[in-house]
Image (cartoon, rainbow, N blue to C red):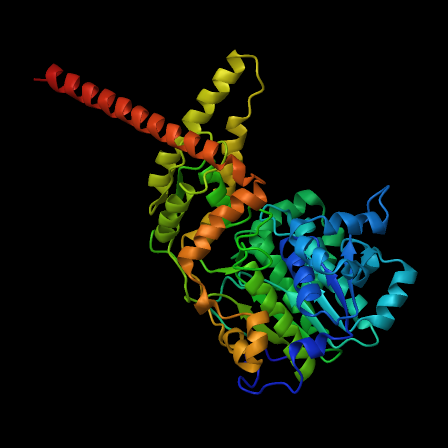
Length: 505
């Protein structure tokens, strides 16, 4: 396959059938359905493609839990509340397939495999481990071998029309401008998989930094290997690759601001809101490429639809990225955070939430020592004296480790081409543009950031609206305490400087 040629597509031709017409009667297999994006994908398909036949979701086996109980647990998530109220029978369209991407054949039973082979037309491969700290062996098994196993299952599906793989926009770090096309991985993924079979952990740990370079972690490296794996299946069935940038809380569906994790920038916002994080290394002018989860999911659904209808010979690639549209800088993000944290403060904070970005690494490290490390040791000292369990130093160490991992992504601007993604809305009807919306120019950033802060409080922290008055009082008291302490510190510094000045006169 020629990696240096662009994908060929017609950006204006509208398919002969609509999106909902295409998905009608289809059976879909989804991996990674229990994750942040996976849950939204399932909910969106069930709500917006009402005539689909069945969704099969791969869910890890758990002792003592039947597939039925796992299904109940899955649907207990708040995002399904309205869907179940409107149509309780929608449960019948979802079927749990016990399995695991870490097992041969995904750990799927023979009976379930027969059903998937005979019924499925669409595969959404969304399973991945997004941990940046995962050792290379585990990362390859999750993010590369897992993809290979899913492709091998898909190859057995007699009615397969499209295989959509969810990659990431950060899987080709050596490319200055990431275009919507395939790129070769640094190493042959099959060679890497084979080498892991004979290399022991000690040798592998020694080789890892050189092996993954220029990637700062195993996540991007193993995702690039996974894309390379896809090329060995070209011609067997239509394949699409979606490369989302950093996926953040929902724009409007199923609920504005919905989020169930604190990965990426959301973790920074959360830690700052708790009064734990006070400084980070980033340029005020740096723009972070992010995508609301619901817009990302609409992009996945449309990409699978176009690829299945058009059946391209090569892999269809789509960068689900902002690419400068409605993007905001870290400084603007900080301003929005301060503005809406006053409106939606959390019910408890370690200290008054105040955080700033530092352009220079040494400046950040000095600030972190005085605002993170010293207070952590002081708190743990008090806890130790009181005979309580200490924890704060470990929290700060984890925080700093997380910031170091994020530093690679927050200290620079990334350039992604997204022409194909932006063309999608022009190739579907006006009515379906409202259902499967991908036009990020319509997002009001101020409203979105308000819902972002509200969503962290309501959905991730699970804090009821009735607790807001008490939280606001605490926020105000912490502010007064913060100002008082700053005044005392500045006064002491002024006094020390004055005494030194008098001493040397």
